[in-house]
Length: 67
Image (cartoon, rainbow, N blue to C red; front, side):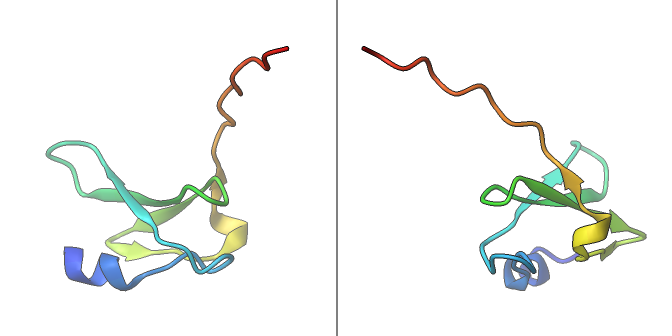
């Protein structure tokens, strides 16, 4: 998939930017929305931008609160 086309895509939920996730030497595998913590799959070079098809990303541990 052309990187210029990826730059035009936004998250279908929040309309925020997406980050392309790929393994070196492999085709694009998913587009990640950091704001919604969702990863949208790319199948046969076509992004599947449906909320029901998205994979939820694991939440990172929050830093410990200071007292």
